[in-house]
Image (cartoon, rainbow, N blue to C red; front, side, top):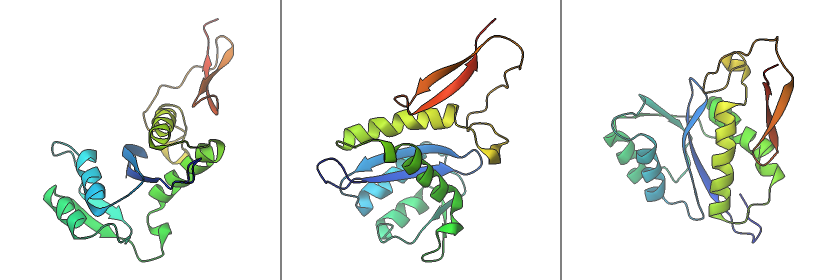
Length: 169
């Protein structure tokens, strides 16, 4: 992700497939194997890791990364080279973040991008619907009854997106 000062920032995202929930993300201007390995540890504290980690074959996932992954009990599933369709959920969430957030803002620095992503992911988890989840959000919510008061738009993500709620009559 290029910034306003032409620095390139890297975003690391960990996604749980079953609810399309981003459980961890971080931003850096210099992604290293040690930094990447630490992100996996931070994503799954206290024996909360799932069984499998699906990832591509990027060089950043070297020996140090593989040792950390093995130490926390994750089995790695490598996708075929140049085959992003083999990890469609992660590719989809990255594309969604680009289209719905990053195409509309000029990133100033790491802190700014981290804040924007945190804000967007709050919207993504609580308000953005997913067809694969039965038109629900990653954080399940009750369906509002159709009768009642007016529908009001609640701005989210700096007014890039809105959540629509029904006010009491």
